Image 1 (tube, rainbow, N blue to C red):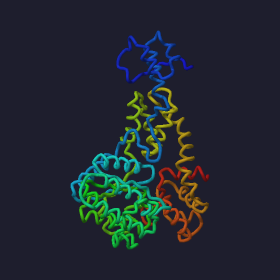
Image 2: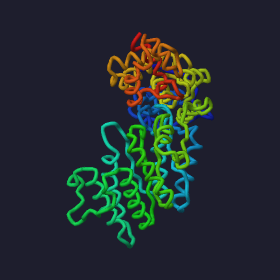
Image 3: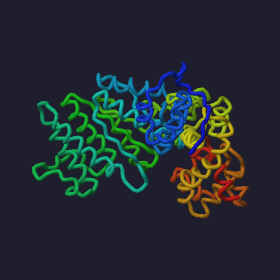
Image 4: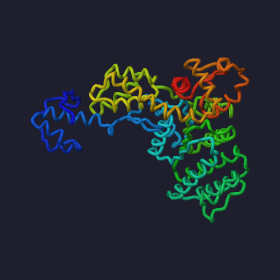
Length: 444
């Protein structure tokens, strides 16, 4: 049993005086024996109870995880305002660029995409959310969700046959891309619409399918937001078809918009696919948080439960994490679990760092590292050995004792996997922050 402790209680602004111990014991959640020790000392009892509650791991305010919403979404007000304006203008049938977020892994793109999904729902939109990956085509990702969307639209009040026509167009599209119609349970009473989205050319068919979706939504006096994560995994033809479909929406001022997210190569891929992409989309760059915002992301959640980080502790975490949101959550989470008093000091951060690094190595970093065969790992290790930041392809080749051309196939595979990207011609950089440090630990 823990002995008496003297702790500053931030929520207390005056002496406790008389205390209803029945209430204290009820709030204490199973620590009544400990509290009974201090029945003669009301302030001590209150402080002890609050201390146990504040540092309870179950009540840890931080939430490291892929796409997990942080307790405080700070430093992203500008891009969320862009999203609010886009949604409002689409509802009013006013032209506005769709949004494609770009940035490294761990900066919170998926968190923002999820928040934009919630914003769209609150604004009265129907949303379709998908995540692109290498093993599944754009058509296979979209069709089941669009089927559900059409049935949801059909349940809404409104006259007209656009929804039924939309299902017929969707069935035509499915037949053209050679998907199994039976698995989608369209119903025997819906025939495909011949000549609509059934050519087998995705760049022709997807715009026609989106047209049917948007017209059905318009007929039901609603709007649709399509949210796509990891867009860079679409192949060239799929990305081109998606851009062409959104171009059609913009030209017709129809109520269908796109929110997407991808690695920093996304603007280049879109521009190479269609030259007008830069006029069709906004590409907000999502980077690490500024120091002020990073400190808020740590301090505000713990202050909400009466705890604080010391200034030195905040400075240390911000320096180690370089302001990347995912790492801020990891260090905040482990530091909270290790802390015993408030304010949480720099020594606690130092003590937590080893367990954070181990956790990142075993999960966040090694999952990506494990996808690479030996030749690709050697390439990554050579990059890391040259220092932080981007590296010239010639320097990587020199480190491996080969020519840049010999490394072309390996480099192409790493680019396709999203392990590296090219921030400038002839340069390569990691898509995962701090990955260079991991590689030095993984392959000394």
